[in-house]
Amino acid sequence: MSEFELGSVVQIAYMVDDIHEAAADFSVRTGAGPFFVRRNVITAADGPDGRTGAFDHSSAYGQWGRMQIELVQTHSAEPPEFAETTRARGCVHHVAIMVASFAEHRRQLTERGWPALLSASTPHGNNFAFHDARPQLGHLLEIYEPRPSIVELYRRVADAATNWDGTDPVRSL
Image 1 (cartoon, rainbow, N blue to C red):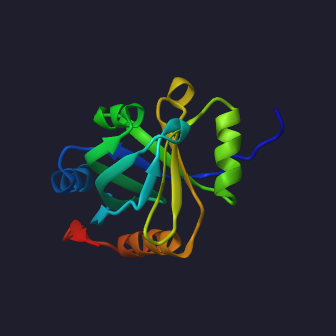
Image 2: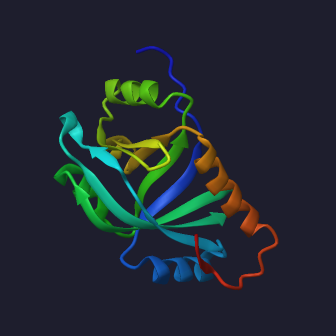
């Protein structure tokens, strides 16, 4: 295998049953936050081998030190291989990595035995994929490019945490 730079983890994500309750609890227990909640819109999604996929979910984004935390509430998910990953609780679901080339990293991760269980796009044209690294890492790897709307989300979440006094821990995005 050729040399390959995976990149740095920029986010840790957990699956939860209730996004608002989980964000408030996570904030109290860890001091992370504030959390910004939104329903995520996916315009196109594919599972393994090009099968139709879907991922209707809400997320709460908060800052925990230098790391962004995402709490994810799934409303529906397809295909079954990906949907199964959204049922686990009490563990890391995925870590996110910003990559220079989405297509190249998808190819490299797949060649290394970590296939994409779901690849999708947002209305802003942001592509992301969840690669199955569970056998070796215990969780999925999410990849996406540092496009303007993503960089702005990370900046907004991090800025809100600067000098945050713990009030209003769950907010709308």
